[in-house]
Length: 78
Image 1 (cartoon, one colour):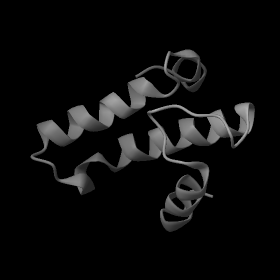
Image 2: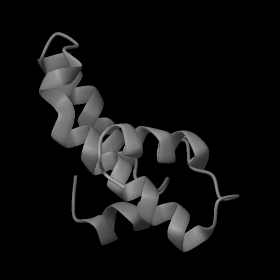
Image 3: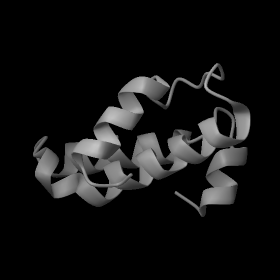
Image 4: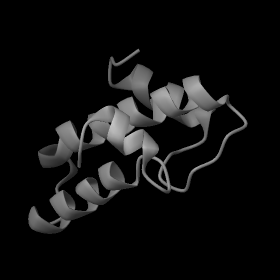
């Protein structure tokens, strides 16, 4: 996982951050609470992706914009 600019430029966008979540979950016996910083980082990247590309843009690494907004609100990231 690199910086935000690098992860946005990756193909597909934000993929390194999604992979970081998977690695963290595997390493921590799928205890999501131990991977919060990686999840927050993915949501940060996805939010920047949609702001730059528009809400009709797609990347397999990110939830749909409406779900992303809900998740970020639930996490206090908005």
